Length: 287
Ligand SMILES: [Zn+2]
Image 1 (cartoon, protein in one colour):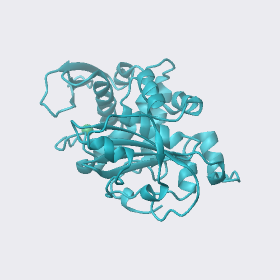
Image 2 (cartoon, protein in one colour; image 1 turned 135 degrees about the vertical axis):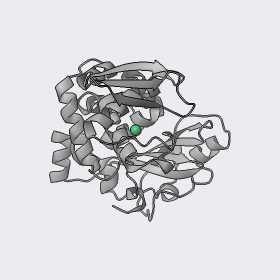
Image 3 (spheres, helix red, strand yellow; image 1 turned 60 degrees about the horizontal axis):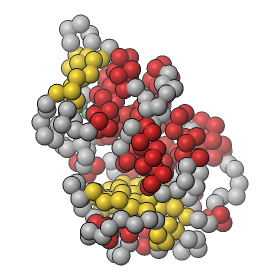
Image 4 (cartoon, protein in one colour; image 1 turned 120 degrees about the horizontal axis):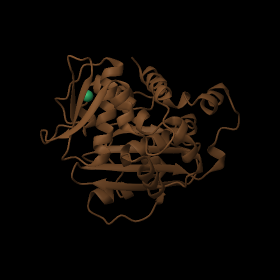
């Protein structure tokens, strides 16, 4: 099952539950599959597990030691296992994209759709300012993690915008807006954070400041176009993860014609899922 199929299943599921208020109720999602959520003491790196009871209902246990947003995501992730009929493989830590099995990533994609439903999220992205401060406010509104929110923000943005997640100072994953992909801006997985970039400096212990201007050819492969690039970043030393938001301020990089793909994105919100979610191997290929 590819990411588009996963996203479609998630949107079908959401349509059946009909969340309209924010933040969405993950208990309602659980109830839809006959699941009851319990917060319990689990292993240190264990997010959640679920089991089908003889009654046909599900018992979903989330780790009470983790923060509420992590627990909400975990509930959605466990719902995904049931709806997608994917057997859990929770041997690798969930915070590491590097070691995440494909089935688990599929459930993460489904969970992100549930927590940040397209119909509710997209209008807010369109109305939002650029930068991680504004994205943090959206994360608060949806009661979702900054990573999930920033990734979907970049994916759905109308601007030339990308979100880069790095682990250990190396790029793991990049989500790009449709217009950034059309501009052929590509951040290669595995590359080191650009020296002296805001992201690299934060990782080395600098105090976060606001967004600043960045060098496009340091971030993007084979980049030889004009345009002012801006960078905003946060670093979480606990996991050695760096979150980077990149965006251009130049209208002239924007595609001038509305083609079928853009039309589909505007009307159905599907196109932006093509090839920019954290899918194994895909990040290593050029579009
Ligand atoms: Zn799982």
